[in-house]
Length: 492
Image 1 (cartoon, one colour):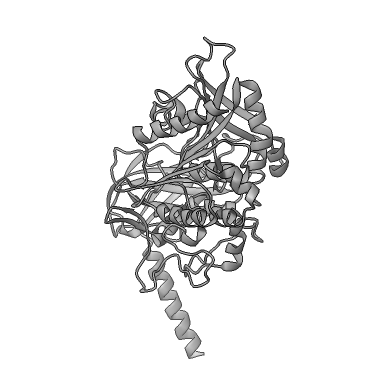
Image 2 (image 1 turned 90 degrees about the vertical axis):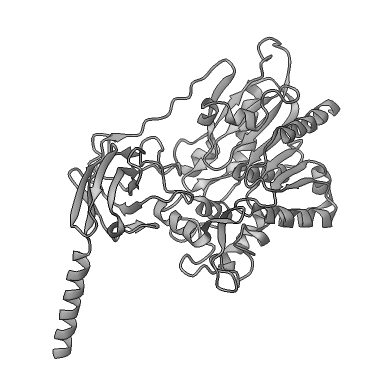
């Protein structure tokens, strides 16, 4: 009995000490009934986002290059008048609430959207920016209130820039609700002056974070892919790839649905019926978009006349970024064999972040970030209805029972096992450009891919550069790409 009493006293003291340590907390008013109609209760993920620079709006999500305090919790059954407490039990990254001291810009965001990975997706709810002062060691509770919904960003069309929102029956059937394939069409200057002229069409897949709205925000993306001033005129379609779990990269999967099937069978026929295109169809992209472009070319070798991929996401899963061989049960994605941390991102000799930190950041989001995006495409659906995790998030050990399903998305594996007909169709159609010092070690996968294509005798055009990191685009590359496209068009 005395032992039980002692344990009880110790536990009580520990509990009091623990609760007293909760110096900084947030209490969030999450009444959303006036923003979303016909629902009385909501599920979502609630974020408190902060920035040490009080001139900054803290709504921009956590990132590895500039880590700022961020805290998140899952909440269920939001009801009118309910409030949620954010304390040290919240998922956090890099910062603990009780470590904070000084002035911060603070915003609250409620993610109730289940169709896009973007925290700023239309329909999500946010607070206004506030500046608070945290006094370290002092008990403080800041009350914040969600004040307005995020509105859809307007797509401003012109004669030469068109928004395309195609309702996909295949995706609608999969999700059991109306689902669109979306993108932006960029028309050539002579399109209306020469009403009978037909043009080659180029499907463009941007890197992580890119979407059709970025085409309306300055000229960066049009310049990147040489849409003006390089080669013969072409029609460009700048594609969206975002979905709930990240990027679906136009690959059919258990978690994201029939993404390449709907693109090939529904979207392309619709676009090419609406606009004046000739028989030449090309693909290009950057990073995650480069993977999508390569996937479509390799899966549908006769449908496209060539792919130009810059710094593609892993295309050989034996060399998966810095993580290693995803088919080896001894692979640990966090640690090297000597116990040192594996680097996720680098800039020259500088370490930007490690794999373990990058995955901790993803945990704050809950879902929809880079590695979760890979799993949503390559993994089977788990018993919980979400993508199966390919490695243990605590230990970092690879689960080969999950990664075995990844082989059918491994472009090196596909090429290695392709028949002669497919290889002949792909000869001279694959063009890849990557830096030896790619920020995310994506050069490793390209080198593994080249090793396989050389071995099976597939003719490819693969180039490695020095000191360019994750952006190898240049006028020389644009000029070369368009010259190669134009030569193919001239010969057809």
